[in-house]
Image (cartoon, rainbow, N blue to C red; front, side):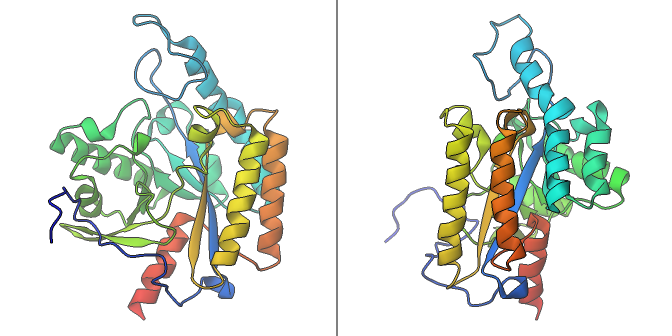
Length: 298
């Protein structure tokens, strides 16, 4: 009997006990990736994570703007050095406003072979509030700008603030995107139905994410690292029976602060050790998408 509840129509229910029996590369069960968010914000207006309450209306929010800008000027470069030292590729999830503001930052990630993932134009705006044609233009413009600069169109998309309209998956598929990080409903890649064919959902974390964990919930970096280690250890055990995905979402204005970097270094060294022992597959969302689609074509 129908419940009469509104449904998105993008995918059917599938319990985790309905297991897949293939493996990730090197016969591993767990794919791990970092989604490293490179964002730029309007000065004095619009949305943005804050270390303090926003300034009163009509007053430029220098405090929160400066805190976020620290990530682009300092934090991201220190994290980049850490990723490079440990040989860890990342998914660089980038606003195209970065190309206007500090293109050398995104160029540095591209130069080391990291995947560039589209993240709208700016995190000062919510995509889901745009009119249909304006949202289509935003998606197409972001894809075209990244393609023009790096010679390859991005395959993945994460909406600023994970803000979607009713049409977002359709527009992403129409524009040529392969996958979205917006949906956080499973530990496995899930095919989404759209008017233009399949758009894959690659799991992106909403709790193992430094913004909700550290900013509003006020947990310490030590607690965040413990969460990530526990998540990895538990998923390694669960992945003995089926292939799973673990993402870690990071923002340089948070984890790039000097007092948090030592803990981030310990976490990444711990995970790199698991990789080196062949216990997990260190990957990117694009590589995860490529692997599951290759399986489907065999």
